[in-house]
Image (cartoon, rainbow, N blue to C red; front, side):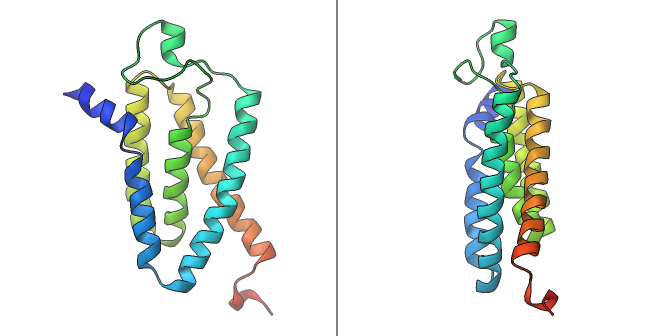
Length: 158
C-alpha cells in the first residue's frame, strides 16, 4: 500500500498544485490576478535559469544509479539535482503563499508529500529535494524584490 501511494505521489500528485493554482487565480479579484501572474512569470524565469545553472554546476546521480536498483517509477539516469518536481511545486506554493498564507501552506505540504514520494521511489536524494524547495522560495523572494524595485505598488509611489 505504501508503494502504491508513493508511486501516485511521485508520478501524478504534481497535477494537484497546478489545478489549485489555476482555480486560485480565477477566484481572486482582477487586480490580484495581475499581481499573481507577474510574480509567477518573473519567479518562473528566475527559477528555470537557476535550475539550469545548478544542474550544470553540480551533478548528483539519482539513488537508483548509485545503488543499482530499479526505482518505483521510471526515470532516465541523469542528474537529480535539484529536484524539478520539488522546485516547481514549491514555486507554486511560495507564489500562492505570498498572497494567501493558508493556501500556500497547504500547497507546501502537498509539495513535501510529492518530494518525499520521489525520494521513496528512488529517483531523488533528500538533498535534491531540500535544494529544490529552498530554490523556489529564494527565487520567489527575489522576484518580489525585482517587482517592488521596478514596478512599485501604487501606495509606495510618491
